[in-house]
Length: 144
Image (tube, rainbow, N blue to C red; front, side, top):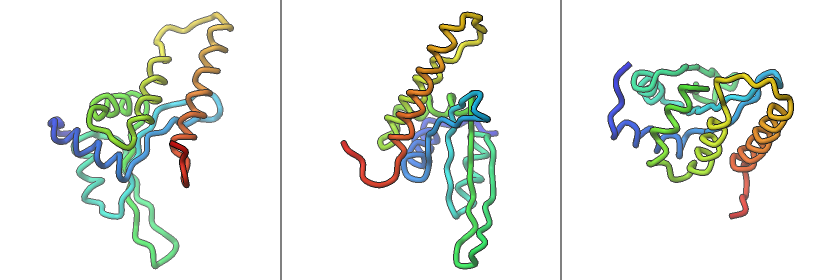
């Protein structure tokens, strides 16, 4: 993996703004993780992302012959936090989603708490963040 330059981070932010998504994903209804994804029909972009930022690359072949093959790039958890922190100054359209993701990341602690009230409170905070992220990522008309 190449070491990203400042220009690479700005480019990545533009790709996230235009072709990407910052989301919170719930896994098996047990825990949530931050995820950054970008999909495009030109695999050169996805290969560039993989070379510069690591992550996971996927290929989606359409059953409809009229549709092009899609290529996706994804990072989650710590890698997504790293990407969001470095792209944050350059984001325009997805700045609010990035802020929610960074707030979510701040709720993660390496220390395990046995206090049920704190665990429940943290879960409620995260559920609220998940709802806010869904609202920000909804399709259609948005109320400003």
